[in-house]
Length: 65
Image (cartoon, rainbow, N blue to C red; front, side, top):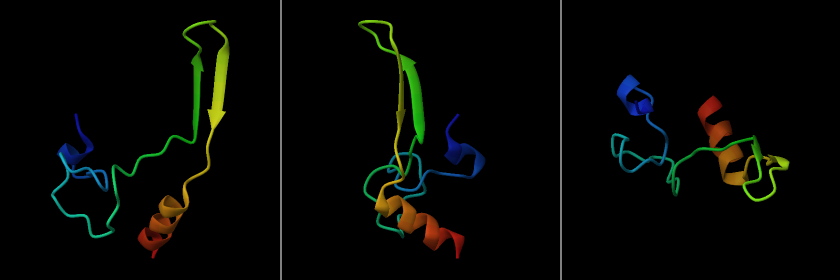
């Protein structure tokens, strides 16, 4: 099921959104704060973290207003 089916399309999703992109986002507005997985070659557990990109932070501020 896509989020658009329940009334919450992802900002910037050109396939499943309603076609509007009033925030001029390039690409889907998705972000994983952290990922944990086993490395496919050596089986070692990997953990990665990433802050929101600036454009994402700016968009969140606009949406909160």
